[in-house]
Length: 565
Image (cartoon, rainbow, N blue to C red):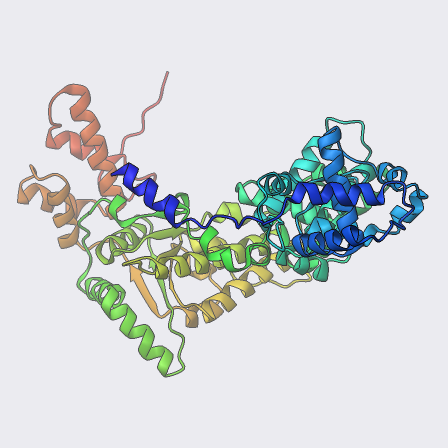
C-alpha cells in the first residue's frame, strides 16, 4: 500500500519544465562577451540572441543578467562569496560603477536568485538557481523563499545571541539587524512594525521580545537593553521603561511582569502586543488554557453542605441561574433588554460557615471551572503596579471566557475573590497617603469591571463593614451566612460522625455554638486520634476536643487552664 501511495504522489507532483536550449552554454557566451568589456560588449548577433534568451529565462534586465552570469561563473570557479570589486575587475571598470548597480543586486536578492551576507559586503548565486541551471530547468519568476514572521524574529534573536560570542560591537549588530530587516521588508509584521515604531533600535528590541514571548518566557530588561545600546544610552532607555514612557509601553505593546531593579526587572508582550505580533494567528497561539489558574469541576470533591431554610432557597436559586441552559438564556434576555448580562454574587457572614465551599460546590454542580484571584499577588510596592495587576486579573478572565466559548461544551468560568474585603475596601481620602490613592484606583477599576461584567464573579467576605457602599449595587445576589441553627448543626454532626447517636449529636449541637468549619476541625482531630490510637475516640474525648476549640470562654462548657511548672 505504501508503495502505491508513493507512486501516485510522485505522478501527481508537477515537474519543472525543461528548456530546449542549454542554459549553462548560454551563460558562458555572455561571460565571454562581457569580460574586460568595460560594460560595452560587442553586440554581435550571437550576443543579442543569447542576452534576450537569458533575460526571458531569468526575468531580468540586461545588467541583472550580466551579474547573474558572472555569479554562476564564480560559483563554478571557486564557490566562494563574491566581492563587488571582483565583478568590477572582471568587467575592467571602476568599482564605483558596480556600486551604482546596488538596486540591481537588491532586485536579484528579492527574486531569490542572489544571496547577500548580513553585512552586504559579498554576494553569491543561490543553490536553488544552480540546481535549476544544471538540470536545464525553467525557473520561477520569483524563486525567493518567503520568510515567515516567526522565522524572522527567531533569526533576529539568533543574531543577538551570536553577537555575544564575537568581537563585534553593538553598532556591528545594528548593521546586521538593519540588513536583515531590509531583506525582509515585505513581511507584513515588519511593515506594521516600521509604520508604528520609527526608531530601528526600538524595533530590534521589540522583535527580540516577540521571539521570547513565543517560548512563554519574559525578557530580561537589562539584557535586552544592553544588547542593542551603548553604555551612554542604556540608563536613559532604562529610565524610560521604569517611568513607563518608553514608546513600546506608550503604544501598549510591552509591560512589566516583574518590576524591581535593573537586573531583576522583566518585560513581555501585552495582550495587545501579542495581537499586533501574531495578527491572524493570535487565536491559534492563545488557544491554550493555563490549567494552573483554574480549579476544574472534576477536581472538586462533592460535599454535602447544610444551610438554613432561607439560605438553602437562595443557594438553590443561584445554582439554577448558573446551570448552562438557564445561564445562556438569562444572558441573552438581559442583553436584549440592554441590561448588564454578568452575574456578580457576594457571599458574606461569619467565618467558617461554608462560603468558600459553597462556591466550590456551585462550580461542581454547574460544571464550571474557578479562576481564583491570588489577592496577595495583586499587591506591589511600586507605584501604579497594583492597579496594573488587578486590571490584568480581569483581562485574563475575559481571555479565559473567550477561550472557553470556542471549546466544545465550554462554559463560562467563575472568577472568585476570596476574602474580597482586602481589595473591595472603602475608599479613602487621597490626601491621606499615596497608599490611599492606589487603593482608590484599584477599587475604581474593580467597580468599572463589575459594571461591564459579562461572566460570573463571586466574592466572599467576613467583613461587610469594610466594603465600600459602591460595591453593593454591583452584586446581583447578596447571600448572608450565619452560624448554623441547632438543627443544622445536629445534621452536620451526624453527617461528619455517623456513629454518633441522635441524642449525642443533639447534645453537641445545643452545647457548642460552632460554625461548620469549627465542627470540621473537631472531626479532623477525631480522625487523627483514631489513626494514632487505632480506635475510635469515645464521646467524652469528643467533648474535650469541643471545649478547647474556641480561644475564648464561649464554647459552652467549663474550660480549665493548665500551667507548665
